[in-house]
Length: 574
Image (tube, rainbow, N blue to C red; front, side, top):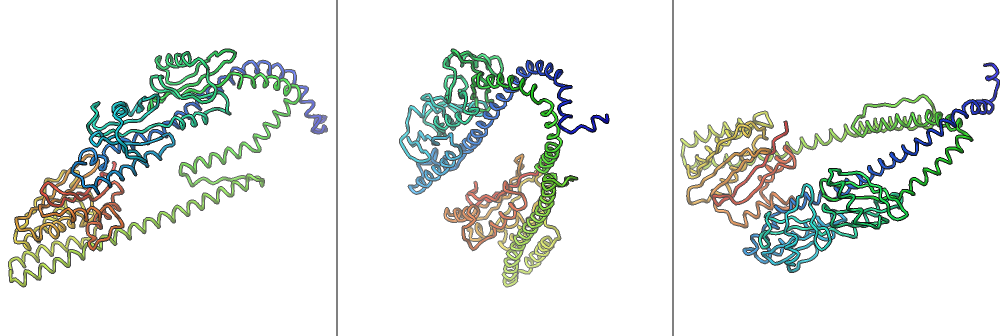
């Protein structure tokens, strides 16, 4: 041992090499035989994973198109053109066409695979696309008026091209409803397939559900019929993915394929065997050379490199993965003073700073929301206070003492509720409060206006809502719908449990002009719309601030002929 300690590094390396070179060569021969098999398996597995990645990329590109196409079947402008165009004015018709074209432009620009998006209106004998307004092509309309399986194969084949078509209503009769369709760009598909090639070698092919249509890019086996037969046999046998070895003249191809269960498309990528087996043979020669020249140096260097570089990098990557999942508590410690120490320190500083920024942003957003809620709440109370004292003044002036007594009692109960120290109350309490409010208005209108409250479902009644949410809508019915009503006024308040959301409707039978309805709708839908009355908009803002973007306040004409205001409140998931 003392002799070895006196040797320098170079003799130590030479001596070690001589000791292990003979068994190493023997092991290398065995490893070379097995390595070719293992590498072949690894390459096929890697290629199959790439095909899976590319087919998932196609699904991600086409998936939103299918969803948005379905949403357009319930679009108001498309519905109006299909079913109400005969009663539209020229201005309404033109605006509807423009709105439809804008939405189609959104649909067209969502994906590079969409060459054109359009809607066929048989009743108008027109085809409205993102960029044009042409006469209906009846042959094309009949071909696209087919119901496709949007969950497994949303494409249709027409004129040897792919189309995405969704007729409404779902029947095969041309002449009714409308058909929303997308023309898929063959050029875009070819460009995409060329990007799927591995290092520019081989080729790619995309086929439809029945393998009757295909687009190719790059070098693929020349015998397409044989190729499609092999893939068809695999699919019919229940294999959604796999690979085939295909002989094509002097060349041998490995064909990797996978079928999309969402699109019904099959993607195949072909690689010539020589492109990856050839390097394997060259690798065997290099292995012999390396085994003879410097196996021990490679082993020692690799082991040392692993200790010096890989281990701290692995810890850093693991820390970043935890950071990606939201774990900001991890801190890295490193004893050495090399470059990794600098990286670890910077990581710790970054995590600490992220924690500070997140806390600052959370507190800031919370304070903003609380301030907005308090402001909107304060805008409602004075509004009714002014009206109440005005009504009390009128009753006193008319010397209707009994009504003054009743009115004062109800008014006291009203402000007892208003000043209650609670921002949220069960909807049942809000309804009880609105009944008191209706009694006040009944005294004012000499029972000329009748208010009816419908049955309240249990889950709806227990819903926690902002205080004074329902009363402004009932008050609006009195002031703007029934104040000048000659006949008996009627206000109906209904409550409905719609499964994922609650629906509260306040409807009156007052006279409602179209211009007034349009004013109210614009007030609720256009944030820039200017109006002297902000009561309804305040209710809408309170709903959205408390219940999120899916909550809303809607206005339309009710069954009684007057205004109907509808509150939508989603139920919170348990």
